[in-house]
Image (cartoon, rainbow, N blue to C red; front, side, top):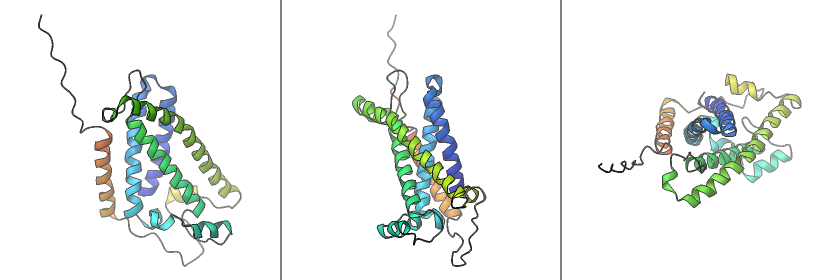
Length: 218
């Protein structure tokens, strides 16, 4: 359930970020809120990749060269992400992490400044703001490839990858494959606690706001 919630919430928030960032104007504040929420989701997923259930763990699906080669040769068998799919997931996570972090210190030279803008100088913020805008198109490209891969598996390989991300259950014929284990309540609470800490930092709540300048007497 945590992996599925992450997946669908991330989809909704990325779409919201796209719309609010594209329209701009008064929606830029909602763009920032969506970005902070994405930061929290990504933090949760990184932690869940170590303490979560079997098929959500990086140790299970992050491939080495041997597994990638076996997949290319048609010799790979397994549940969860195939080796090439796993690489695409890692690439998308890395790109989204950069997008989230760069957005936290970005500015638009008008009225918007990210919650952590005060931690960097103007030149650094300007550079990351530019990369933040350009990286948007890389995200669009990777998401498009992701959707095309899902369509390919559904139409050509007759393997519905969406259904298990809704129901949480994948039908398999090999009895050697075991149901997912681990990722219980304690692991979930640990992931939530770390996520809360990341959100505290991402919102800039620890940055002291300077007092307003004194008002000159009449």
